[in-house]
Image (cartoon, rainbow, N blue to C red; front, side, top):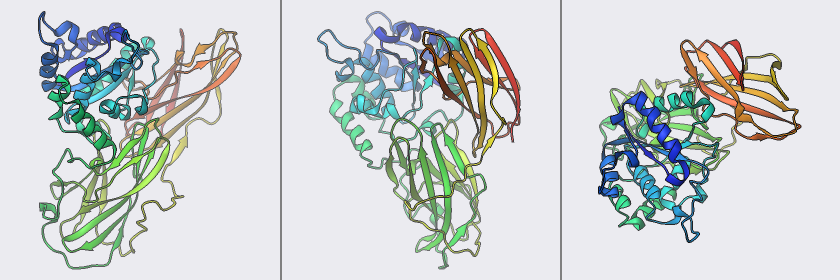
Amino acid sequence: MAVTFISYRREDTAGYAGRLRESLERRLGSAEVFRDVDALQPGQDFVQAIESRLASCRVMLVVIGRDWLDAKVDGGSRRLDDPYDFVRLEVAAGLARAEVLVVPVLVEGTSMPAAADLPGDIRPLARRHAVSVRDETWDADVDRLVDVISGPGHGSAALIGPRRSSAAVKWALAGMALIAVVGLAARSWRGVPPVPSLATAPDRTAPIAAGTAAAFPPYAVDVPRVAEVAVGDLVYTLVSANVTSRAAGPELRLRIRLANGGASDVNFWDGSFRLAIGGEEAAPTSGLNEIVSSHSIRSGIVTFLLPPNPRRAVLRVIGGQSPADLPLDLTQTGRPAADEQPEVADSRSQAIVRGLTREPEFLMKAGDVRITLERVTSRRFVNALRLMVTARIENRGRYPISSDQFIVRVVTGDDVIAPWTAPGDPIAGMSTSIVSSAFDLSPAAHRITLRTTFNDQSVERALELE
């Protein structure tokens, strides 16, 4: 089990951090959770203690409340702008360790800070997928957080962007080489490729590329019918695949599209992909390392060297709690190679979105609030079946309400699943809002129950998934 470090600002979320520690200890055990107030002994050096705990830490939870970003010192300057601020040092140290999964935990309805509002050494925090923990759904949200902490792939596989060297940790904590840490962050942000976390930098003498194959005309490889991988707000799509002849042997060339539906920029780089073939796992040789802006789409070419006469391989997309595997049949198809221009216009979409409800249906009325289920749709990915639940909330009262009072859960078997994204905006009096909740279910899911709750009223609706 991973040792979990809770980072928080006392003036901001001390109460939430304490409650979170107690909830995690009940589920994981007291030895698996570290929070500085409870774990430090009188007279113990704070920096040394944090450094010691980070050495065994595998997960860092950064608890972010309403005042985390803009907390001020007595002089009026922002605490995060102080290079020796303990919260900043903790987060920078966690981000610098390649084996630590850093998870922002949002409380009090707080939104994720934008990258532009963070100091350079902790700016990559804005690219991490956050988990919201709310009072009214505390236990279910903490259960979801525990799944992230204890599930497979909780280390570097759960990241989207490049990692920095763990050698920066000690300096970040001591505050003696902050410039070096900032420089590393800036270098990573500018797109200088770091060393991949799962393999050393590939070259043409790697075992998987051994041997020389006779020249052959390039040919297209069949793309699986379901060729999309979902990682939160990110969707990777395998658009086309070709095998071509190189001096060192065959080369697999993949055109991959990344759709970034999130609020922050993300890295689109070789580190998100591996190729499993013949008992080996190889890193790409393409050197892809770009930034994809928020709410935008970009395509790139990812290449791998192959052994002679390749037959089958698995493209592994790294990014979620566990890798997603796309099987590829590499035998010659006789079809000419597909278009490989990375930024060519792409009108074809592999997304198959199915409607599970035929028309809007009334769910409940609670006082001045009326709620209607507008639609439920499903979209199948390699690694998940994504369910999107959309509802209409009519606030016919005079005072505003919060849309997070409307709670949606999916019941499948004995599991109650919380959404990975849910509404949280206010709804003014005498107004209507359309809200959505997104769930990622097992690809094998077929029958579920949709449970919707508002205050003390609850309605369940059975659904068959196609």
